[in-house]
Image 1 (cartoon, rainbow, N blue to C red):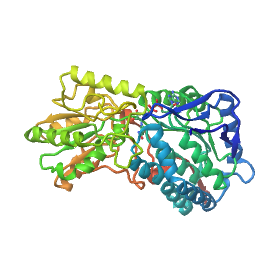
Image 2 (cartoon, rainbow, N blue to C red):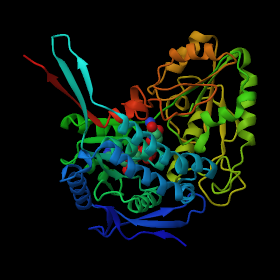
Image 3 (tube, rainbow, N blue to C red):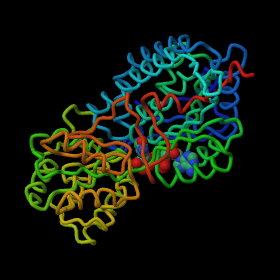
Image 4 (spheres, rainbow, N blue to C red):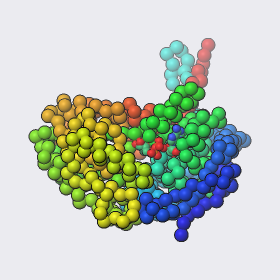
Length: 481
Ligand code: NAD
């Protein structure tokens, strides 16, 4: 049985699309169709933006509500999502190949947490009176930016959506969301939860479509801010449009982070955390440390440990509880990953495990977890984002060289340091050019700002900084004479 929708979630209810195109969703495991949704047109985007605008600043608009009143709605939204968490997780796994255990954590579990966290944070915020230097004082207020255009990728669709939705809605913004065509069924389930929660009409609208529709939304005159997660190429194009329009934009883009193994590390003892920091979600996460830097003094041993890890991973149906590596999202993505594997070989990398499609799978866009040894920092697979289960292990002589190699990248998003001495790890992390770094693991905590530098993006999500990015500051100078 396939999951098929006939309407779009615009202005609080299911509305027919003004066009007749349909987005078919194909399972990367079975290669069969598993559902469909109507594709939104530009005219649907116009309607969605108009609805979001009316919901924002109409009479009793969402933007003028007390934050605590908004938090109540977000709390109900969280409850409704929670009651659908298992269905959300399985829809995501079925669409993009994410192993179900991970989907339960990220996709089913994270969104309600974020809604409650940001709802509560906004409800507790107060205007500030700041004593001045010139005799008076200043009232500093925060108000919502307005209508947000949010564009999301397919790899972690629900968690990434809520990195945007939760702070935007809590701040008082209304949202037009364009999900990725590969993962739309979870977004439509989210719309069901919003309706059940009594979300006021127009506060959230969903317009599924491809990149042209995304570009149309980015440049729409009714949008006040754009929040984008996706590839660096698309991010640059969006930044150009927003620059021309002086439109605020948050960009969470690609990565090629370093996992630096220091000479005192016991990698084998931390192997589960190392897997999570380097190969999670079939290698399809932006912050993964896919360049592993290993000390030359312990190079062979480190390569062996990582090879054993990759060899032992259970490849299979992402809906099975014990699967650790599922298929890649599409045949196009598999072609891309296989292209990088060929490039890695051509550049002189030595494959220690993987490098092919698993023989055991008849259907599905699978690639074996693959480890390359003898990689140099100039090799393509050490510089470009592969977005698949492929690790490149690069040797270094001393700490200074490790820092140099780690920072020899156009990206700067994640990273990790592996060491027996956490203080040493934290000191080393300060020298890494990246927005986030983990010590002996990598977990994005909701309270900590997350985002990248260089080609990995502009701006931060999560933490108080994530909420601030959907707010305007206003200074009202008091007692001025
Ligand atoms: P993508 O850039 O092709 O697409 C992402 C989304 O943007 C999709 O909804 C797509 O339809 C839309 N889009 C594409 N081009 C657009 C344009 N010019 N204007 C407006 N919208 C456009 O990326 P993808 O292949 O779906 O996702 C993988 C990429 O996302 C990887 O590079 C990954 O590193 C990155 N990513 C980054 C983060 C982060 O937080 N930094 C998180 C997840 C994924």
